[in-house]
Length: 85
Image 1 (cartoon, one colour):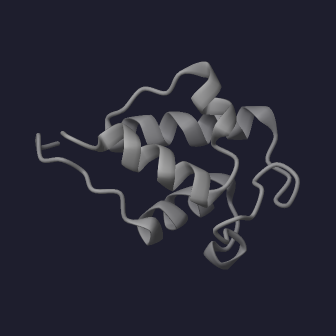
Image 2 (cartoon, helix red, strand yellow):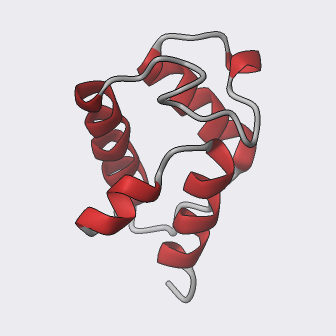
C-alpha cells in the first residue's frame, strides 16, 4: 500500500460497510443505525471498526468506536481523523 492519503469517499465507505455487514449497499443510508436497523451485533460492529482502521490507516478510541453507528457518523469521524495528513 502506498503512503498516499486515502480520501474518505462516502460511497466507497457505504460499499465497505455494506460488504462487512453483508447487506445490500442501498440498506446503508446515511442515518441508518447499524445496530437497530440492520441488526449488527457487537462482534460485527468491531469488524467494521477494524476494517475502517486498516483501510484508512487510523486508530479509533473506545468512545469513537461506540460512535460509529451510522454511515454519516463513520464518515464524519473518518474525515476528522484523516484531516491534515
